Length: 186
Image (cartoon, rainbow, N blue to C red; front, side, top):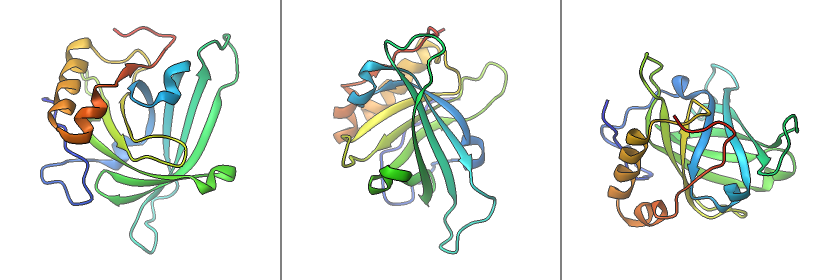
């Protein structure tokens, strides 16, 4: 399967295929442009459907739980968490709102490309773009189903395709860094 990356858009993206059900579950942030992750490790995001029923507005809602540790955390430490709720705006496009005290924070984000196949020999990944919030700049993340990451040739191809999008996305891609993980990349 070749890597396809689509530019962020408020419009329908022709040729963009995205299965929200297959996207649900835990993803590991292996690379990011978000400065917040520079002194953190083992960052994961778990997406959990709230129900199989669409809201009256036709959107689907799901929980979004980010877990991470300070880079200096000792084994057995409890993770820090950020909880929020997402709802669909369009295929692969979402609006996040924080829960609790973070209710004032919201952000639009999109999947720019992904492979959610769990077939043998496949390496599920996703590239996401998020708009700036009250607390963070706009940015990009590379997510994988495996905490170990994905093979270097695939990662390189994802980076190349993201850069080829051009504009602000290409500029952001120049600031990617590897997020610290306790498990090494294969």
